[in-house]
Image (cartoon, rainbow, N blue to C red):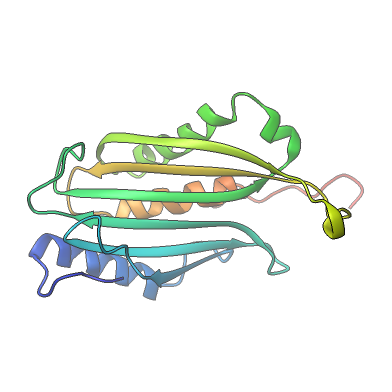
Length: 192
């Protein structure tokens, strides 16, 4: 987390305190690791960022994401406010799921439903959902094809209390990774 200019205004200081608390706390889910990361320096006078990784029990990576908080006391065109949150989520998908034409709208609904579920007021939301298939050739020809989902989104929070926004972003990461909702246990596969 980095504030570009010091001292930062009060609203941005409150956001930094919230981000620090999230990074310093034990995550709500053991599969989730949240860390600081450098913030982009040219998008707004003040910026901070965190990243998260969702791991399997065997420590292999299921999904990664970044959440960037931008603050401009003057606002910027298209923000509809002083703050803008920029989120990125990338997760592997099963090929059948990636081929589903509804994965885009479903992926977007993960974000909007998570924001609403955490009562994280927002406006001016926009974004994209991308499905990618990677095939290997040559010396890597034996590697299996992989499919991924990328969600890139931005929205303006309606206040400087972003705790619900962070929780919603974490939920989207876990959902994209294929984890069951918090508090729900997966049933073992038949014959296990």
